Length: 109
Image 1: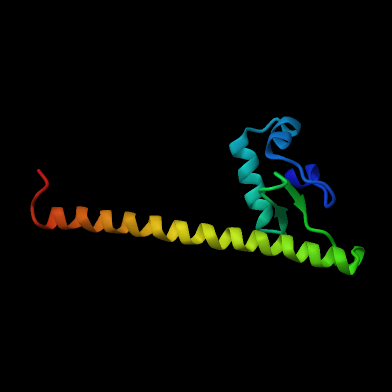
Image 2 (image 1 turned 90 degrees about the horizontal axis):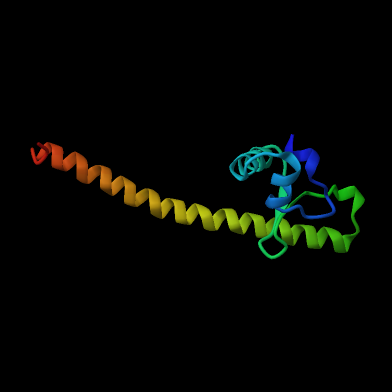
């Protein structure tokens, strides 16, 4: 499982995960996505990589604040991606409707 290659202290890059696991980059991304459905995985574009979320009982208040900020960054990233996917979805839906209308008008040979 990909979780065993991650820690709650250091970030591990996707390239490192590919090298350590022998999986393809696509497979590593899939496994990370699946893990994110089970528990928070902290990621940050500036630090490049992933790490497991820390346990609250093991942190100081300063570490909790930093962890909360990092988790919020992940939430913001997800929200941003949702907006882009929604825009892309609207383009595909419009295209499907155009195709349906072309069929209804008899424009398809």
